[in-house]
Length: 238
Image (cartoon, rainbow, N blue to C red; front, side, top):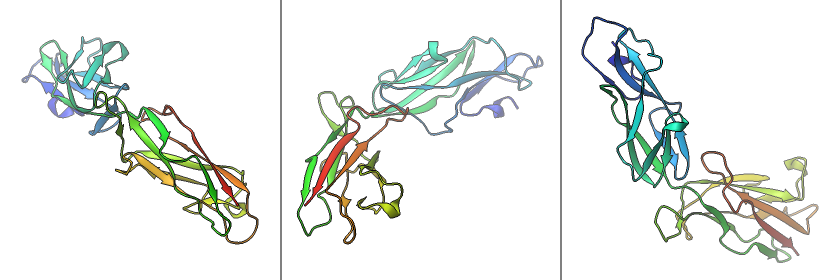
């Protein structure tokens, strides 16, 4: 029964008559089975030791060991924090006395190090036209391949029309290309690699703004802002 109690990874001994004896060790996380952490970030996991009755053994000595120290490190001072060192597959095990868990798999993802403009940040739309040139940014990683800059794909970038400020979409005299005031766009393989873009549009009738400002920003998995955000674009309508 104790073996079946493991949530993500567990190890157990044979049957015992003393139900207070530790027989299983398991990892406990809030992410489910598909665990991931970005480079330079930390994923905190829990480790639980169970006795033969299925109860947690308080104060049981536990240590976590990385089986892939090049990609995944361990910071035991942070309640078993798993540190993303380099993009790639990682595995750790938990040990308590003679108990050893099954390996826990953690994918280390490349971290976004910078958001940059990948084209002009100022555009002039000629009279008679209503759509700007693409406003392009690139989300870049400097660490996965040492010495190289890598564009990250399938990552979200948020674009927002920040000036003029409109109370609602029906009141807007300019929108983005999706006919809204904001958009989330996934970065692509390019060219350039890791790029995402929108256009600014003004309506064919009614009030026409002289210029608009669009800002692009991105965040990492831990919620911190990617350096370079926001990237600011200014579009002038003639």
